[in-house]
Image (cartoon, rainbow, N blue to C red):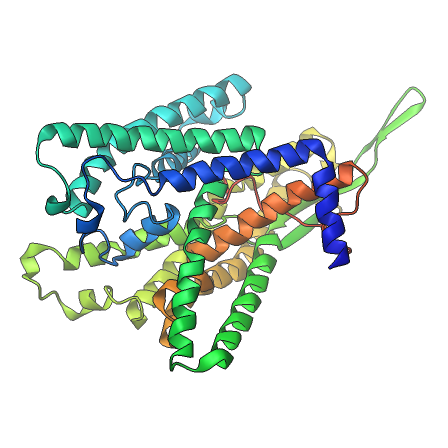
Amino acid sequence: MKNFIETIKNIWRIEELRNRILITLGLLLVFRIGSFIALPGVDGTRLGSSTGAGSGLVDLLSIFTGGAFTRASIFALGVMPYISASIIMQLAGIAVPLVQKMQKEESGRRKINQWTRYMTIAICVFQAPGYLLTYVDAEARPEGQFWMFTSIVILTVGTLFVMWLGERITERGLGNGISLLIMIGIVAGLPQAFLQEFIGRTSGGGGMVAVLVELVIWLAIIALNVMLVQGTRRIPVQFAKRVQGNKQYGGVRNYIPLKVNAAGVMPIIFAQAIVLVPMYIAQMPIFEGNPPMWLQSFTNFESFSYNLFLFLMVVAFTYFYTAITVNPNQLSDDLKRNGGFIPGIKPGKQTTNYIDELLSRITLPGSIFLGLVAILPAFVMMAGVKQGFAQFYGGTSLLIMVGVMLDTLQQIESYLLMRHYDGLMKSGRIKGRTSSAFGAIG
């Protein structure tokens, strides 16, 4: 406890770090306040079952927006349109040579960021009417085209404002702003979910012993997720010696860190989007409320078919997303250009094949563990844990929380070490995942 208090004092002594933390907390508070401001004309007391239907997509978007999605807030769309636009531009950088070339230049990256913002506006204009017509009851909203137009404008501006908050946090605050906004929305639902689980257990569902067992299991799962996020396979690299005048350059030994989970949380998001398609098909009018049994099984999050399909999709998308984010050819070319080589491996094609084979080997256990994390909430619910608290045992919620917290703590530790203070831990150093909660966005 004494060391913890001393660490807090050291953090507060660094003026720049103190100001960044205060700015970050202030902007996050603005985001949370805005998530409770409803659209003009919407009666929050009449928001009925359509906004809280409990479907997988609604639950997912509600988690990412901190409940703003189900409250018909001005921030109801959150940062998801920006995330979607970023993913599209990232995939375009792989499929379109022009975009790939622009990504390597500073002016090109600025132009890509500008295109991402324009695409965010287009996605908002497309998503906002669907949200208003589908998830806001007719009884809760005014009639007329003027209200629809103004609400679309407000939702679009709200998303742009949230995006601006994220950029200001990244620039003047601490951590990746977009990731922090998503994480704070997820964490906001944790106290209420735990309280409901606590009341349910203490009122006849196992008592305090059951609550303590659940917390111990939850902490163990968090520890395993930290291992997944931080796990790397280091490839030794030797750089050739160069002598210029009386000085010697190179000849040092370094490492290429290949992450066990290079894809981040994106495979789970893609897989969940795919497995939700049968759910929408089952609700089509052609079935008249009586879809086939195989479709009905996909509407139950605890069914064997749903979880098996989700697991296989996560494994497949992990390989796919790792293949497009880690390029062995580029790594091999960069090594050769800088005079580096892997001991025992010839530069060029053999180095590319070696990195590719090693990447495939470490991706297999990473993809399997990521698939287990994705379906873990279903098993927890089968064990009697309420759905609200079970969502924090795995899936996107837990991975984003772990990844963002590690990245933020790593930045704090860097400030402490630069000022010759001890780090946050007595032994070892905190290794962040990436600059973003979503793996390669940022």
